[in-house]
Length: 385
Image: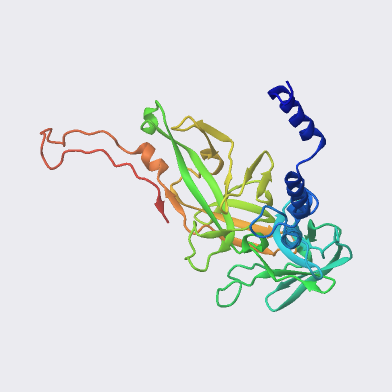
């Protein structure tokens, strides 16, 4: 049977394969004409409403990144001590080495950009008051270095309270390298001061309990002995505890006097900075004061060892006024000889205390409560004299 369903179906399949639909072909050609060359080309030509790349915006972003990196680079150079022009130079710290009496000066040098380390001769000037007192040159080879100057080369006397009106006369340091000069750096007075101008001394009795009726059970074994050396603080009065501490090189001779006559001489003390030494001992000058250790020792109330000058070494067997005479001799050029006595003396009553009558009882009428009842003799503590 011709023209049936099977024949029609075969006929339609052959037409679909062999003969394209004209409307479909036209639609495909239209899409290709408007695509402009595929997805990549379409993405590059999208407008504001599409997801494509804007080449102008990309260029702006790159430029901003370059500027930011340049700013960070310049900031890094500044932090690392580089400058945009010549050197930048400053004094950053000072210290004193008492072992060889040198002033140590720390200098920071910022180098020009792209220069890794400084070079050339650096000039250093130290001034006191109104003008320079020393100048010298050093090879600059590092951004941060210490430079040593002998104190004796520039020392002109103390700084603190050195002016006639009691004000300070500061030592200052400036440094210069290839036309770049630092601001003036003031040396602290506690470092620059080297001259002792006031001395003092102190005695304090050392008493020990004993099973000794002949001394009323008290043994006055000796005295603790200390001396003070420093500079007078003009703001305060001249007292034993108001000296300004001085580190320097000098010797100390100290004597104990009884009613003006020497009765004991301590071995000569040599002081270097604040470290002291003498024949058979050593110590440290702290806040202007130095303990002079004697040959006597005992255990104190806190189980500590107490050193003292034995009574037999200086006590004349007679109560009276005991003072100290101190002689300080500086090592040149820090000063000359300073002689002084303690700001006060001490009157000890050791003979009296050990021989006083400590008994108590009734008077001659042997009747208690009467006016002539006997009382113990009082103990006497040391007094200023």
